[in-house]
Length: 172
View 1 (cartoon, one colour):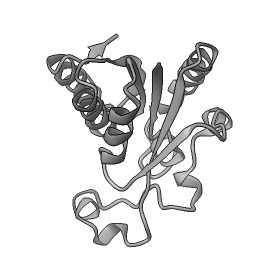
View 2 (cartoon, one colour):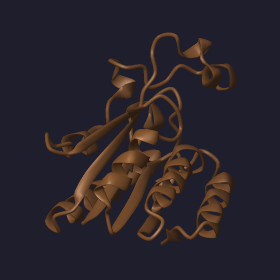
View 3 (tube, helix red, strand yellow):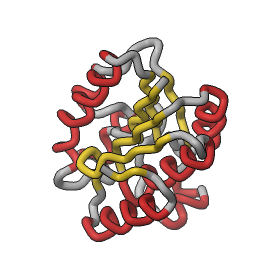
View 4 (cartoon, one colour):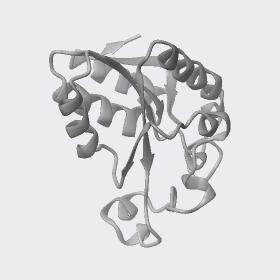
């Protein structure tokens, strides 16, 4: 079985407090991937960057002092048409930091043959979760589509893709 992991394609990363030009362009690509995986019987996993009102007092908030993805706010929700693609039987993982150990455990237990990641931000949460996926599924194919993820910094986007290639993640 295969899975698509949609990483943090949330309002705050597209057009909210940490949004950036070009992030909205991923919407049709991600929707297309979700539809493709559904047709082939794959599982869809959504991660949600999730913080509380105390975000600025956290370790992450101390280094990135911009409130974002506060649980219960519009910024925490999936962006537009991607939100419409969330089905009741999809897997949803809320995570309080860049990478998710819950995701690692899930992937290890489900033993997917192949997983693909897309979403935001390439050099922060996508790279973190792609490496976690590769560690959890060392003999499985882990894919990141370079056109289905983005960053506010194109050089960091490219650098993250190179790092992923170096740890045997297939960047397409």
